[in-house]
Image 1 (tube, rainbow, N blue to C red):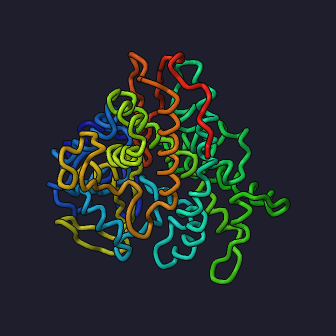
Image 2: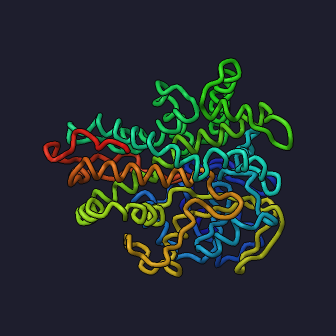
Image 3: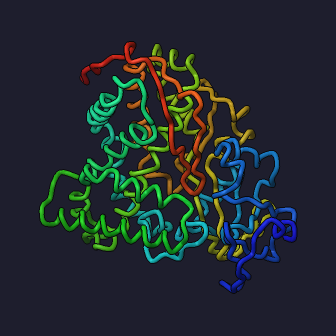
Length: 435
């Protein structure tokens, strides 16, 4: 503990939940609990660690060589970090000892919840079933034509320029537009909604995070009120007709489900798509191969999801338990950086290598167990459709020279800018017609 303190500017120490908590200029640092073995303590900040600011995924992967499989960091209120695929899988499936009722590090202690993500089984199950009706394989298959249409519409906006900042213009533009149209949100508020979500996933204070939650819930409430007065053929209108345990969803339940959909729909897939295109931009041979073999695009998507996972899942301990020599106590927070599962060399040999021919690929990028991401089928479809449309029309693209990546660490990781360039004369200006 002395070694950690030497590098921290202490401002004020207070008592909170029985622990000494020190407010600092850049972190919330706590005393190491007595039940944490000294060899399991690592000074690691999920928001400001220098290795993450140099390269998010390689930075996390460095923990495989330098840290225990499970370790405790005193930063951000103090929490455990789970670094291995099998241990993450075990914990994320264990609803007896671990709960998802607290989703933030540091703890936000927020009055707002995200149904069904904030609920544990079996309480969450009927709510999950409601959403899965709209995000299952059949529903997503019916969206295919709309996905292709949106992909080409957005590519049309940039193709003649020979350049774009992919992150916002396309990486976010495509899946966020699809989601907003699906949900029934006004597309002219795209930039407003994106700004809210982007701030939400940066390192903001618990108080500011709750303020942002209130803003989001207000937006969702307004949407559902509009649809009660004037139903349309959109997801908001359909959710108003859904039932749980023989009754309609309450206003609070609709707000909570909409809150979850807002955060997931406006950020997560955008980040996954941006990382995948960044990799492709640096690999001309792979561009040529996928253009010649479009049937391998799903393999590209899966390898990208493994190599560039963006979500770091949290749990709060609800019952004391020991796992792999670590003593978890009720009330402890933990994080499973899902990129560490996909980058685990015990499951994926040479994990830093991007290989669409990889055998027995293992990742849990969409989590695992009862809380597997509801939108995973749609996310995979969006990435597949966009990459296919992009490669058919844009030839030999690359990252603009001199670009320095701007990484966003945290609970949902992102690349804040991706300047791309290509030669417009080689591009297909008119997309192929959808059958």
